[in-house]
Length: 263
Ligand SMILES: Nc1ncnc2c1ncn2[C@@H]1O[C@H](COP(=O)(O)OP(=O)(O)OP(=O)(O)O)[C@@H](O)[C@H]1O
Image (cartoon, rainbow, N blue to C red; front, side):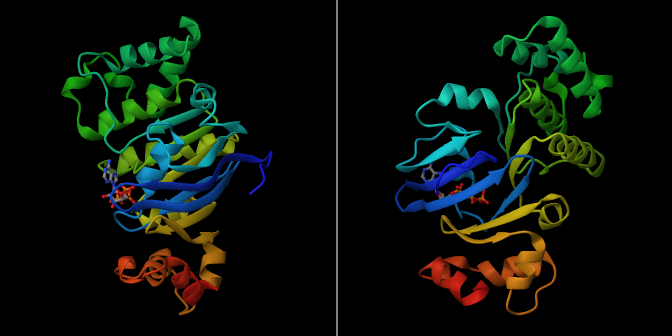
């Protein structure tokens, strides 16, 4: 796949093996200003893929380009333009959200005035302003998740990588997070997000990639996936279950599965 200037993320023939292959010749592209949802059954290789993109896990083979930067050759430059938020993010219990955001801004060498301005606006956007000066140690999982997300956004990344960002959030918090994310996409930021909440992918994603057994088995807009699904599946859940089945592992080769189902 040649490098293309409109790509925020290019994953090229990525491989990672633990005791068995976890990511197996995976290639995909996220365009600038695109919201891309990465779906797949448990153990499909989603987190492993994103951890390699974020530079937290070494790939066995393949390449990753973030905004045109070769992330394996120049990981520091890549990290400057991306944000990574895992499904169990860590925040420092002894810090308040404001102190945490100022600390993270300091790591990025942001000017204190700008850091404070950005911190205040992120705390506001995530509904954390009333708790800005309380220690994170007493926060619920959802509040901690929002603090971590705010921290990941403070340096104004161009590509945001989110692993299950809405798990554990109540309806109000999920709405705040979705509003922030869609606002960023409207400004040209790109997002790649894993989720098991298919409704979220259905409503928010510009394109959806479905992986099973470490391989991309389907990709497209919701409408494209709908058109390709053979049995007239209409919701993303119908399409997803048709493609991966209840048990993607029952198929020896997911490429064959793709040929059968969506060719
Ligand atoms: N550090 C590790 N050591 C050994 N095996 C691992 C490791 N990390 C992941 N795996 C294996 O790699 C495969 C892919 O795991 P991964 O966490 O990427 O799946 P996933 O699609 O994110 O799943 P889920 O939806 O359950 O989070 C699984 O078989 C998993 O057991």
